[in-house]
Amino acid sequence: MADAHLANLSNQLMLGTVLLYLVAMFGYASDLAFGHRRTAAAAKAAAAKSKVLAGAGGPEITVVSPDSEETEVSPDKEDEAGRDWGRFAVIFTVLGWGAHLGEIVTRGMAANRIPWGNMYEFLSAISFAAVTVYLVLLARQKIRFLGAFVMVAALILVGLGSMLYNAPGPLRPALHSYWIAIHVTAAIIATGTFTVAAVTTIFYLLQARREASGAEKASFLDRFPTADRLDGLSNKITMFGFPIWTFAIIAGAIWADEAWGKYWGWDPKETWSFVTFVVYAAYLHARATAGWKGRKAAALSLIAYGCLLFNFFGINFLVSGMHSYA
Image (tube, rainbow, N blue to C red; front, side):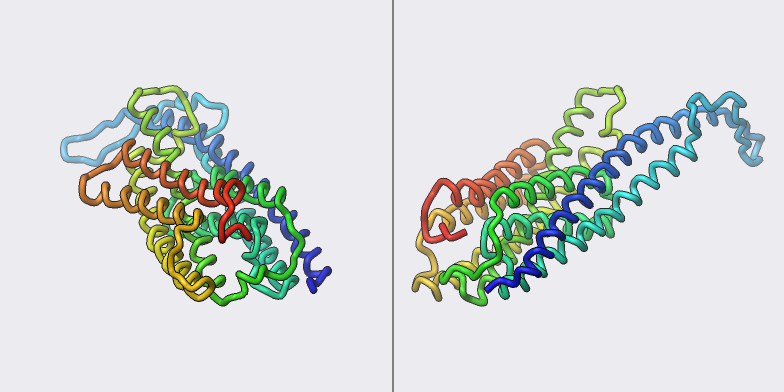
């Protein structure tokens, strides 16, 4: 019997999570907007300081024109405003992450089980994993520019999950196994990781197109790294997620042997999990051996993510099989 108090607390925490993620998303968007103006102001200031007088063997002396400030807001103030928006967004992301963790924990306590038993719980866990991967990467690399779009992906996943809401209850008989904590958790982490990789890949393609066209018009992409760096970042994120996905498939096969007496039965979910594995493996193999990079590799990466989405949504809603309980 589910604990109604904890179930209600879990629902309230989910509402808080959505609100905090929304605030964080707007904060990241403001950071991108102010960051663009900050970059332009800094460029003008640098151009104004271009007159340099150097004596023979003496120190360089920079002469700044008195009318060098052409913007209404100084670069320093713009930079400070941009940093403030960025810090604000990160703080609310961390607060949202904490509320999200609380939602998952209280949901599990309300049902007295691990909270991976249905589509609502799985979507919530995937969005949580995506935000976690983003925050871990943010602590190691300067990827704040991805924040707004990771928040959008997380909110879409949470929104879809809310449409499929189920009250906390017992697991289906087929799911009563400790393997759910191993197999499903690995699948959740891998899916969240691949989601961040897909977001990065999309913006690689946008940046690559912009660089190829030589566009000089101001754009929010001014705040993004070069296309080459985005391409490399997407590859690294995928390399992290791929072994976890591989382990999820292996753990699922072992669980299948315990539950159904065979490791592999070519159930639709098993088949598309394997297809997803093969396409991601082809992507990594092509980059490592054939030297694929850039748009061809990005296209293959997005095809793999499309297979992942079909495995999750298409198979669960359109095809019946042994995994229909999901």
